[in-house]
Amino acid sequence: MADVDTQLSHIRITQKDLLTEAKLRFGDDLFAIAFRCPHCDDVATIAEFRDLQVDPGRAGQECIGRHLGALDKKHAPGEYTGRGCNWAAYGLLRGPWEITLTEGRSMWAFPLAGEPHPDGPVIRTIAEVIRTIAEKAEVTR
Image (cartoon, rainbow, N blue to C red; front, side):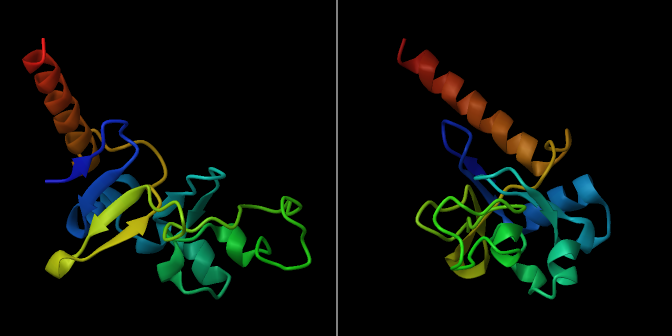
C-alpha cells in the first residue's frame, strides 16, 4: 500500500500503482501521460518531451522548462520567462512523489496532472492516511 505524509504532499506509491493511476487518468496511450511541475505548475506530457527529442523518461522528473531554455546560462537568475522552470524531482527539494521500485529502490517524481481518479490507488492512499490520522487523534484525546 502507498504512504502519504500528514500534509498529503509526499506520496509514496508503487510503480505498479503509478501506472494504474496514469492509465485511469490518461488512457492507454503512454505518451498522453502528463505530470505537473510542483514548482511552476506547468503540465507537460511524455509526448512533449519526445517531440523535443528529449529522453521521454525525463518527463515526470524534470520540468519541461529545463529543455526549453530555463538552464541557459545567458539568463540571469530569475530572468527566464519561457514556459516551465528549471525544477527537477531529484534536486535539493525532492519529489513530491516517491515511486517505489523493485528491490527496495525508489525514485522521486512529479505528481501526475489532474485530479486523482475516484477509484484509483492515489485516492485510496489519501483516504487511508486521513483515516489513520483520525484514529491517532482519537487515541490522544
